[in-house]
Amino acid sequence: MTAFEALFAEYWPHVAFALSLIIGALAAIHAAMTKTDVRAAIGWVGVIMLSPFFGALLYIIAGINRTRKDQISQQRDASLRDYAEVDLPQLADVTPYAAPQFASLRTLGDRVSHFALHQDNHVQMLLGGDQTYPAMIRAIENACRSIALQTYIFDNDAEGQKIAQALARAKDRGVEIRVLIDAVGAKYSRPPITRLLRKLGIKTALFMTNPLGMRMPYANLRSHRKILVTDGKIGFTGGMNIREAFVKGSDGLPPARDTHFRFEGPIVQQLMTVFAHDWKFTTREALPYETWCAEEWSPPQPTVPARSIRSGPDRSLGSNHSMLLGALAVAQHHVRIQSPYFLPDATLLGAINTAARRGIRVDIVIPGKNNLRLVNYAMMAQIDQVIKSGCNVWVCKGSFNHSKLITIDGAWSYVGSSNLDPRSLRLNFELDVEIYSHDIALQISSVIDDEINNSEPLTLSKLSGLPFAKKLRNKVIWLASPYL
Image 1 (spheres, helix red, strand yellow):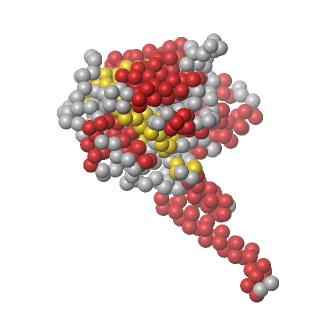
Image 2 (cartoon, one colour):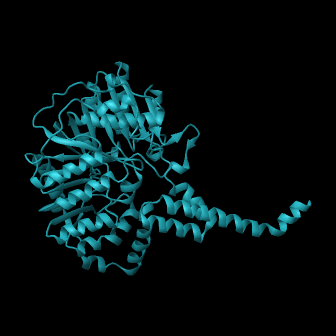
Image 3 (cartoon, rainbow, N blue to C red):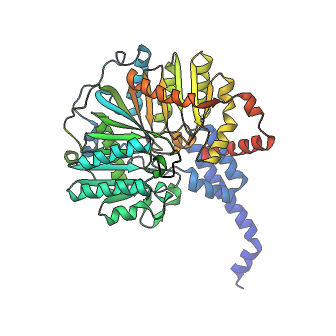
């Protein structure tokens, strides 16, 4: 044994202790200096200091936002900037389409979204996979020039293969096609659909991955967006992934439920902008405007004002959060919320409770059957806070409902991919749409009211009647809700 080895053997505990202090201190300083949420900063500093090596490693993997802000969503590339800069006048006044209190919300949207609010958009609500997937396939079959498809989950099942084969037929017609799937969502089925798509010659990429496999530091940052744009004229977005569980099967069992939306008009340009930016970030390929965008639209009547709200852990961080806070602040009569994962943070929870205390009727619809058991436990640990403030909480009967729908005062609606949970509000890349329209709000309200009519009210007495073991389990899971 050399002198160095002997020295190390004698003093290695001291060396390890010193390294742990240095590494822990550096990680804790980084968390304190970079986190904008004081609770997140306190939490990470506590984890790091209590377990310097493990805590610092966990922070490096899951706590640092490495997203390159100059390359996602807000790129300065002129070819991408042109996508959303259509030569159309911005809507000056939303009052004729909604109500006077929404003028300030429109101003908030101008500052949060970076997309203009345009009228002349046609919106069609689609219920479940039995309406959504055939409508998507029809749009693909009718495409002549380009198809852009982005989703979180694209399962390699009967419905996924139908869409893959429709894309293959479009490719054979000479249509340019790009498919972008989240790297985490792609792992939901085996074998992944990407093998089939690439075998069919369809250009496919995985968001937040590299040729060597999953980059663990990025595994917590997911693209939850759902976009389909054909010929730059027809667009789809909403909450639906591509999975056969959302269609009626031969077994006769009711399918899982969800809601999606079909758009025509200038908002399609905004959907295409979001896709093009995400595609370039992932592949470094810029999609030329003249191939992927339409010069004009002729949407069917009636048309409504609408705009996209993109959010994510980049320069759009908190956009969906800000829009929801603004909408709750201007509400005067009725707030309807349907969410499969209702876990708002303290700020949003406070805004919901304040609306109820102001005398606004607040209806919150959650599923009785949830596909994420841990999230459901955390929901039950927190849900009493809105009930105490006067909100009505309804637990749906029947199959799982994945819809994300919000309407305010029967005039403004917010639809898309965002859930009301920490992941959607802080970690995921999401895409939502705000719509100023009494008619669309009425349609969405009708869908939510149908769910309420098939629900049971959740009361404080029911929650207090749960066994202590379940209450404790729910609270323990709730403590980890920011990471679910």
